[in-house]
Length: 109
Image (cartoon, rainbow, N blue to C red; front, side):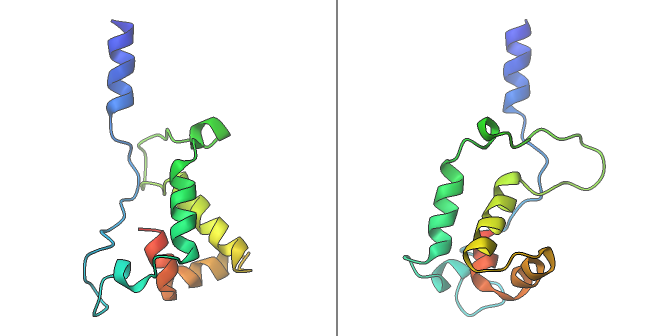
């Protein structure tokens, strides 16, 4: 009984802010995925963070369901690594990059 309840809780989807499809054509004449070169550093950051066992490194992935959904810790880590690699260290600078830089838009979706 206890094991089946534990397995059920692990299979429930977490409440995070969902990203959009990178291949969808929105504002640009081509999709974001086509705009980013295959050897771009953001693709490396994306793959690197996706293979990390974030829960083993102490990132909390279980949040209460009150209020607005939060961003997934992996998404925030990708943004932080991008900022560190490009000498953008302030939260306001990172916010600007999220709104105007298509590399960051691609990385966070």
